[in-house]
Length: 239
Image 1 (cartoon, rainbow, N blue to C red):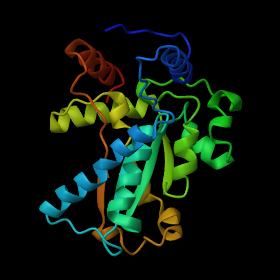
Image 2: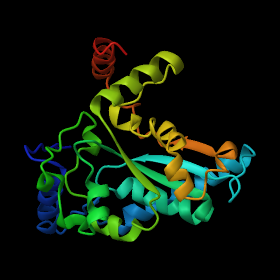
Image 3: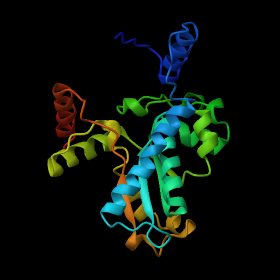
Image 4: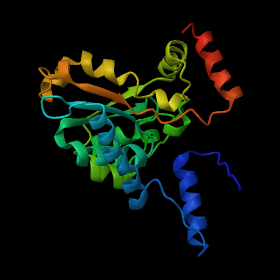
C-alpha cells in the first residue's frame, strides 16, 4: 500500500486522487465528496441503530425524540448516517452536525446556499484543527444539497474543548477516542441549554423523555504513543 501526503487540505487530496483514478481504468476511487454508493453505505447505520434501540426498549417517536450528534468533515459520513436515521425514525430524530470552529464547511455551504462553491478560507478561516478528520475547507456539494433540509442544527467546537472532552471521557469511563470523535460530546449540553432552539423546533416540552446519542467516530486504531500524546496535552491544559 502506498500512502500519499499533500501539503494542502482534504479537498486537494481528493482532487489528486480523482485525477489519478480517471487515468487508470483499473482504479476505482471511493470519493467521499460525491459517491452515492458510499453515502448509501453509511445510511445502513440508521436501520442498525433502530434495531439496537428496539432491542433495548428505547422508544423513539414524536413524544420521545432522538437527538444524534454527528462530527462532520466533508459531509459524506454524517450525511449518509443522517439520511439513514431519517429513513428509520422520520421526524422523530434530530440530526445535529458538529464541526471545528476553524472548519465549519458544511454549515457555511448550507447557510449561504453556495455549498461546494464556497470554502472556509473564503471567509478568512484557516481550516486548521486538531480534529484532522474534520479539517475540511469545502463541503461536499452533493451531501449539502441532498441533506440541507434534513439537518436539524449545527454547532462548532474548539481544539481546546475537544481535548477537554477527550480527557474527561478517558478519566471517567476509560474510553480512548481520537479528537475528531469527541466533537459530538458537547452537543447534548448545547441543545439542552438552548431554550430558543428547543422552542423553535417544538421540542421544549419533550426533552424530558428524549434520548441523546453521540456518534463517536473512532479511536481504536490510534497508536498508543499518539493517544498518550493526546492525553498528555489534556493534562497540560489542566483538564
